[in-house]
Length: 244
Image 1 (spheres, helix red, strand yellow):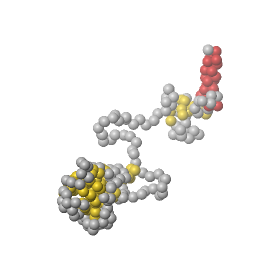
Image 2 (cartoon, helix red, strand yellow; image 1 turned 60 degrees about the horizontal axis):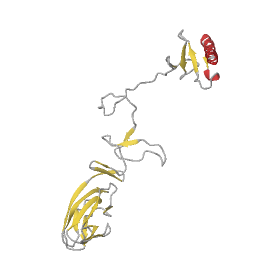
Image 3 (cartoon, helix red, strand yellow; image 1 turned 45 degrees about the vertical axis):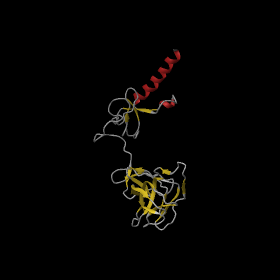
Image 4 (cartoon, helix red, strand yellow; image 1 turned 60 degrees about the vertical axis):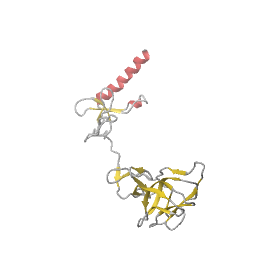
């Protein structure tokens, strides 16, 4: 108890001298764990404040309340799942509208902002968004085709598109009997390996949708075809995009 009384007395003495002279007081000189503070008496009152501005002129000085708390701007908290209201306050996540996605940083390792499209959608790499997928920084609409082939020849599944290649994102093929299937372009150039469908119940192949894609026609203006080794029916469906 005696030590506590002596400690409190020493604090009051140091503070009293500073208040009386309206001079800077540094509690950390007496107690290293204390914060720097001062008294400000330009308005005739002596108040304990934390100096955030110019301590020689008392400009931009922030007050500390009786609990030692510093006043700050108070943004209203937004509850989870609360509906957005115009005028809601908060810290804005800065993003740059960039209709034609391009690098904004100078080099690898530089800081860069998030980029959004014309409607505020965030650009991501090789990710599907609804019926749109990114490909080499461009957006392409996801499309679908029906696979319904017969005979042993190659049958077109997707017709040629001017100035575009066909990139396959996924497909399902089931055949009525054992056969080998190969994806080709319209000139008969193989763009996949040969897939052997045997007659033991494994007469189909499922390639789940992959935003990066499985393969594409090597050049533009070429159709996408399915070649079979035997005269069997093969049916299914295909997911694809048209790319430059």
